[in-house]
Length: 329
Image 1 (cartoon, rainbow, N blue to C red):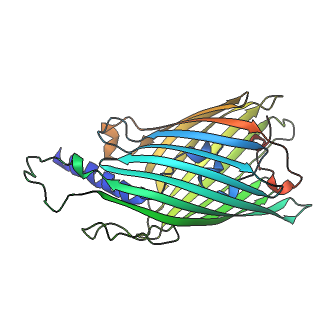
Image 2: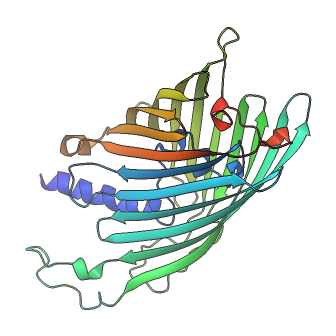
Image 3: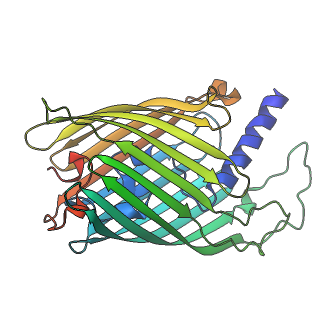
């Protein structure tokens, strides 16, 4: 039992470092909200798209990570878009809050073959805090370190940048997040990471059968690499969408996540589903954890609610999304 407890503590600390000043990426982006991954998606489509996510990880484990976030993006001209996102994250005795402002510009590479390039930039402001007032003595630690006092909080500014390439129904995006090293002078201990740079690649293809224009199949891959310790993981995803004549639709899918040096030892696997009806959106995702924690929790749950508001169509095809879900209402 002691070994399991130590393992849980290790995973919680590791998860805290991996998500610090990085919004935890689970399956929120699969809820028809690619803006979660990249600022380059701001303004693509005919809608003002709003998505709110609630994520609870490792349900059943006390003080497990819990996250709430909201995203909105819309077009401001024929070729440009803006977006805003905010999040609140709790992980044990750590607290994080952040705000991100994004801008994207979309270009035509080749009109005839439908090749487009989008460039995006985000400004981030984040606050990270340790709730030292919640530290309590235990049998193993009868006296708290007197050096642990005061408000252990720090705010940081950072930037993300990326590009998105689309060729008809194919898409590929590459992003560099947290381009500036973090200020750590208010903390002690020497274990807090300063380099938060991470890279994200996202690619997929939307296939519509010629005999049925109301159906879409979308396989996709999401790759994330952390520069600080060379950790990386990959998601393999698949979605099926079915539209009606009014533009409403439902979708079902699944996601498989693994560390890139452990393909046959998945971190998480689970189904997901969503529906858009009369501009209102709802999606649910469940991720089953495959490690020693699986016997102590019921998995990770993600709920997304949203709203699609009609916006006038752009005169530039460079703002057209790869899926009908971007522009059908």
